[in-house]
Length: 130
Image (cartoon, rainbow, N blue to C red):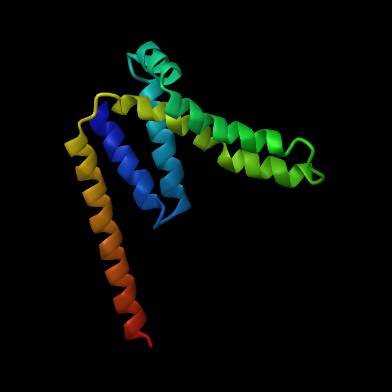
């Protein structure tokens, strides 16, 4: 499940540049990777025991509580619905509990190469049409 999680995390990161749909697909796949895992109880215990992941989840609830006294509750509710998938993101990281540092570096290198290639591509397109 760790390698599937890496694949879905890369999909999410690449979606930051390409499309919102890829971000949504990556988040849904990460959440399903944890929930459909046979070790859900272990992942839940790891999540509850990790203060960093709980703090990341608390950031979402701070956003929710900040809009309770909002004048425009419809706008606030739309923003909460857009940020709802981020509530499950810290829980999805429990799959990577025993993930080796060198594999994390590999993920970051792939993301950096992807970002660089997108930048080079966009720069060449910009210079071709100017």
